[in-house]
Image 1 (tube, helix red, strand yellow):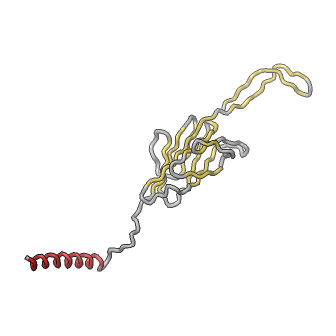
Image 2: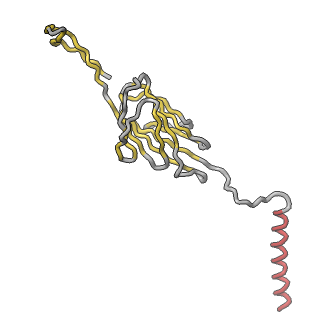
Image 3: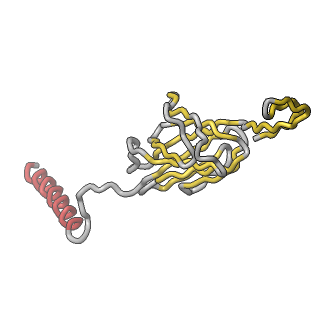
Length: 180
């Protein structure tokens, strides 16, 4: 936001008043780009994740234009508004510069990480930063684990499998010796 003061002529009650100072507040804007990636063997790339953007000191009437996957959105965002992203989605939000911005993701059962610009990746689901220029915030969710196969190899089952395998091999070897 910049402030400009200039002498000029004002009008009050139908009379011209010379050398009155007027103050004009000008907001400069930049673009915040959010990218979404889902990784891991249990990561659902079709799952939607809720994001919330808060702009420090924003008036409830301030509206921010935004684009999702190259399509301008008809309903503008406000500070505290939420939107949904899934794997491969990109959002570009036009925000006022020189303010603190917080982006939060509801990451559920995933390990979330945020990487702002060329900075380091941070294991978190919330990122607060001072917004001065065009920035890219990369959000990655990872979900790993063991795949359920329905086969339990505890107790006696490994022994049974081994015994059946050895029995089968012994049978084949014994039959070959009898035919020779």
